[in-house]
Image (tube, rainbow, N blue to C red):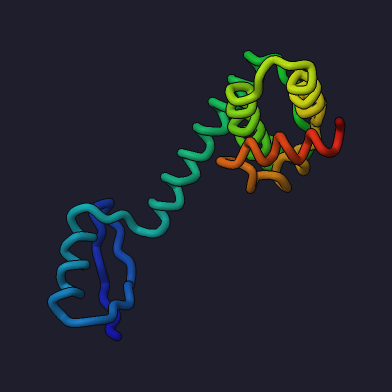
Length: 138
């Protein structure tokens, strides 16, 4: 292992510990210098993406007439994104039966950000989430 001072394409310098053959290390450094982003700039970029996604979700939630969530500002922003992802998918996959409407209405009535954060693992598995909720309320 060797430590190198790398100047990233963003202009910031950071110490990186690299392993492996020298030519692989040099290739990584060259890549970082041309295309890489330092840790701080990367964190800033990711936070900006999350904030943008949260703002889009808040606009969709408002347009859909969903109730405002309760919790800390950070929880509400995150939970709104989670809720919109899950609800958007459920609205597409559920039919318009009486039971489907009950499930959607029940979920729309849940305003605690904590609920949505605790159930975030159902993003991408919305059908399973719908079944779980159906078992609880029907």
